[in-house]
Length: 171
Image (cartoon, rainbow, N blue to C red; front, side):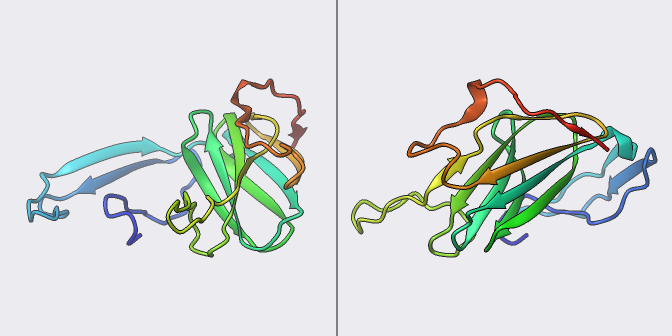
């Protein structure tokens, strides 16, 4: 990803319950200062498919370019989707835990939130959170209906202090 120089993605389909080794040879990665890494290795194991849960979100009332973000309970972005119309979004392979959904009305179509500009009299792009924290469990799908613009009223609220109220649907 050219917008994030310290991040790389290895795109592969893991075999459930398999163990993997990722080894970086010395001189494989260089910094902007032309220094190189020592060799490094990581061992990790893929979880079985039934370990993960999913959120099936029917997002409606989408007005144009909208970013849907899936955040963990510390508001770290897990996944992101770009919507132009009402859509059923399936967010799968989520580790069990609590998640927050957030939309950003991307008025300038640059696929990121813009804070506005006081001098140019530009308002920040509108941000809205889903009304509840979503509790994802292993081997369960959580189905939600979200009508954007009506779930949090006029204010932008983070639902982190509200209790979880929806019931998961068994796969």
